[in-house]
Image (cartoon, rainbow, N blue to C red; front, side):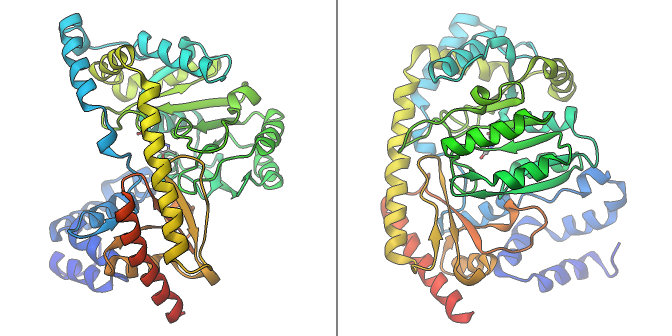
Length: 434
Ligand SMILES: Cc1ncc(COP(=O)(O)O)c(C=O)c1O
């Protein structure tokens, strides 16, 4: 416990805040009382939770809601594309057809109709060998990550991640206190020699996002997928393929899932969050038979089952609506916004700033010149009323980096151009001060 009154400690933290962003999040995220509470009760918490930081992005999203702020920060799907009318209709129909049944406790595996739909959709997309009984419905794919950690990872086990990786996966898996080994993500996918080295440390699992990765927007090329599968096939490592964005492709051609390339090693995660709505919290995991029962135990112990009404609602929606047409709308809008963002970058950011040019998904990744600090850029950007996500939360153990994430899913073309004008000025100021 640190000295002084709670008031002194609160003011002390504000004073020590190194940046406008940190100051803002302290002022908004913590009250004097919460600082005092955290200090007083530190010794009651488990080592597990003390090991894991609060999600930095949740904090930055609070800043993004300031009046007049333009946000390239949020990783949110665009709410204007949620099929509200169709879901309202499906909801009425569920009550008419099933009465109170979908409000009852339900099976831990998930609703059969939904699992059958998901298996059939994989078959149509050319992902082979998935049956309904291999699928478990989870509370978002985020829960599947937590459950996989729970059943597979002991303290000190090796877990391999892409560098950079999805912040939510780093957070979920950190609870199980693994040793993370990071493998660089290049423009065409994983660094294969580095992967070989990392897996040699008897990794229990590796976690990858081969399509339109969060945060970078990178997709693995065909040859890279083949090479990665070749390496993984020789190991006992589970390759967790997280694919929330795979159906949001606005350019190029679909690539093979690891489920086709190394099925014995692959655990596949999916979600309705980006193609339908995240608020219903419906995701799933496709598991090899030897993992299924242990996941079921973990699922039962955690929450018994996923929201049964939400499952029935989405099953009804999918039965009565053309979900391909709905996804096509999302793809058209995100594709147009990504193009606008690339044009705005070319116009307003100096050529020394390099970016990825994703073929789908919701994000692109910018690298600043001469190793400049993206945390400093974030602070300058906030002063100019535009938010980005500095790159460091997507790494393990780095305090600052020169990369940052820009999201194009929730901003229309005019907003993109205005936001990029503001960001361009912040970059110029940063470069001039370097
Ligand atoms: C790569 C990745 N995996 C998982 C998730 C979590 O998705 P869900 O809403 O299904 O829990 C996200 C959400 O942004 C994501 O980007």
